[in-house]
Length: 466
Image (cartoon, rainbow, N blue to C red; front, side, top):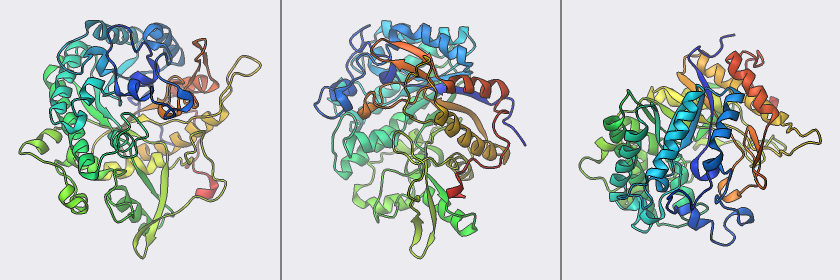
């Protein structure tokens, strides 16, 4: 059975607010997540990222653990307010020096750094200036991207602009589950969405202009994945339509879609069905906006955890509920390995771009056993099933270039606080000790063998899904 290509890379990912801590140290300015976590009853246990994994002070030890796992690549994000405390203007050299040392530490042990410029922690000062609804915010983001590219671009060649812009918009400005915890009307929400896309384009331009080596630039949206309920060609077509519709069966535009976000970036225009659904609430497009948003990128990073099966129906497409007792993760997400086959396959059909799996992983009920180790067989099984499906996609010619497990470390899981554990490395948050889980040692074997140790089966799907 065909394996992954020799140049395929294996790694893991984190984000700044979830691991760094030191929120008041080193000249860092406050972010919207610092303010959000001060509100009562919006985060589990009233937790915050104030200390998190203390990575700001323990990064050298963490990199040694990454090397012990054998990671070939490590994706991390820059905290905008750590390098520009107000989001614009004043530069904090101490913050830039931290990321420069981190990059050097990674390169010293042969780990390829992949930098994400924005993983949800908007500087609080910019939020008070209108945030993404303010068109100037895209320009400020471009200035920030230029600064980081000037600082790290001699050593970093892989960049992502935004992480999961769908989540930024929906969870931060529609449902208010995440920072900044606002509820905007639809017109305001669309201005926010358009501002995010403009910021992406400005950042691409800045990286190209200021990186000193050939740069590979992409971004990392959620891949809202639909899979066919059966192998029937009608159901495959239903999955294809559902993957790129702006209306998920509600009769109205929804933020949880792919085409509204990816078409402007990869095709230079918003999808017609989305514009028709929005009507007068459509995006405030100015003369050069679509050229800015549609700056050429080198790859699409995709974050995939689960999928919904669909089939063709009299009224178009119908989502099929999972049967009672279908496997679920600690996050209550359905376990759907074929997401990592159909997601990349259908995205490549539409956009023709190389891809990197920038996030995929699972939260489990992990604890330290009596033998002092952390045994997590469900994580090993989960990732094995998903990688079997990814292998199938790659063997059919889908150009996936790498896989980054989420996450390298147990960390602050946003509104769920420290109640979820995604990491390959167990973190005791009270004592700041680390333990490599069984999955970390298993993942090392995956990396060493280029996944040749995966089961030689054709599908990682559960029998209930077959």
